[in-house]
Structure formats: structure tokens, C-alpha cells
Image: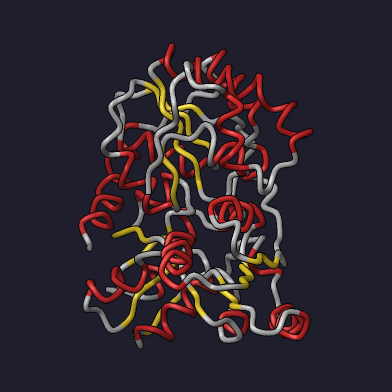
Amino acid sequence: MTTTNPDTTVDIDSLYTKVSHVIPEVEWATMREDVRAILRLKKEKNAVIMAHTYMTPEIYHCVADIVGDSLALARKAQDVNASTILLSGVHFMAETAKILNPAKKVLLPDLQSGCSLAESITVADIEKLRAENPGAPVVTYVNTSAAVKAASDICCTSGNAVEIIQSLNAPRVIMIPDQYLARNIAAQTGVEVITHPGACEVHERFTPQDIRTIRQDYPGVTVMAHPECPPEVVAEADYSGSTAQMLSFVDREHPRSLALITECSMSDNIAAAHPEIDMVRPCNLCPHMKRNTLASIRAALEQDRHEITVDPATAAKAKVAIEKMLAVK
């Protein structure tokens, strides 16, 4: 999914129509100058902004050029023509963009925008899992560092994990580091999955009771859960899929009332695009994603900070695992 923003000649307030359903006018008034400056800086710096689905609406709908989940951003990163990529997301996403675009400048608005999953796994962990499970291929979630990707056989995202596992034609695989995603994928594929005790700090906090309470309070609501949620949470939902798959479901099914069991801002972004849907918001905030703000994006473009680099040898190995993933349709 891509979106191209207007150039700096467009009336900034016309962008407000995209987000007026979720951002009060008094708040938009405080954002206008940053939005105007970012649009100008993108043109001056020959930069594009790639934004994850969990960005707030003023970023996602008003200044981003390319939006999507981790898989979509990785695919689109291969086609970027601009000299600078600003990744509005978290550190591993910026690393992936740099690995796929070694000659381009890649900026991350805040170096502290990490990921609990990426921090849960090391190369030493992979070596131990390989020693304990000889011959089993290592499938690594993209929510990991470049070094971990480099030590893996192939990467995956929540949007293509089933296809990746099936493409290997292996009776057992090592799937790291998200234990819940691995268990959910194992249930769908029937493949034996050896995993690692990592978890997303946003999705692991949801419980089956959360969904039962939502159904009681909002009869007829459609509930969608991200596969990073525990399996018992996914079992309570009407649909489970990656953020891109959830968006496709909404566009296809047009639910009257909808609850997303995932990060908060995705609900806001759907509400902005589909004001006719009654959104229920039982969400958890990602503290890392929320380090991305209009102010931090503006500062990153103004000061060319914080540039992401990846050791060339590590990048070359990681790129093999990423490109194997991208080759699976």
C-alpha cells in the first residue's frame, strides 16, 4: 500500500480532511507548521518517508509517502528512487531499509525506538538452537537485528509466515523469536516449530477476557487479532492477520463495528479512512513506535539525524535471508 503526499504548494489545511475524524481541530493547529516544514524538507532533501501502520494519523496520512506493515515496507524499499529514506518506525525497520538500499542515506527519527522482540534474541541463541536441532532451517521474524537476520536461513513477517514455512517443505523448523507467532503459525501449517521465548510487549498483554468483555459490551462487533497475540487470544477473534491483512479485510468486508486487538494507532488510521465504521479501541500503545513524532521527523530531516549504518559483511548475509523471503509469493 502506498500513498503520495502533495507537494508544498498544497494548502496544509486541506490535509486535515484526511484526519479530521480522529484529530480535533485544536490539535491540528499545533501540527500545521511541522507538517508544512516536513513537506518542504522532503523536497529539498530528495527524501521519502516510509511509515509503519502503527504511526499516528498525522504521520501516516499527512506526511508519509509509503505506508504499510513490515513486509510492505521491505518490498517498497527496493524501489525507492530518492537519495534519503526516513523510516518512521523502529530500528530494525531502518536497518532493513539500509540493507536493501546500501547506497542511500537512511534516517531514524529516534535511536531509542527499539523492539522487545528484536532485543529478545541474539546470534548466540540461534547457534544454540541450531546445535540442539541439527538440520532444521532457521526462519527469523523481521522484528530482529541485522546480525540475527545474517545468522538465519530466511526471514518472514506476520503477513507471509505461513507461505514461508510451507515453502521450506521441512517437517520441523526453528522459528524465532516470537513464541506466539510461531505457535499460531504451527497451528495453521501442521509443521513442528521450535521457537524462542520472545514476545511483543504490546500484543502479549491482551487476554481472552478482553475480547469476551468487548463482545459483551458491543454486541455484533467484529474482532480482529494480530498473530503476535497469544494463541488463546487469537482463538477468541473472528479474524487474525498481519496489519496489511487486517486492512484488506476491512476494505473487503466493511464491518459495521470493529475491534482491533493490536497497537492503538492502527485503529485511528482505519477510523480516519473509514469514518463510517464504529471503532472499538481496546488497544495497547507501543512505546517505541510512539517515539516517532512530527517534531522528531522534522528534526531528523533538518539535521540529517540519526543515520543508520550496517556492517557491510553483516548486511550482505542479512540481505540473502531478506531476499529469500521477498522471493516467496
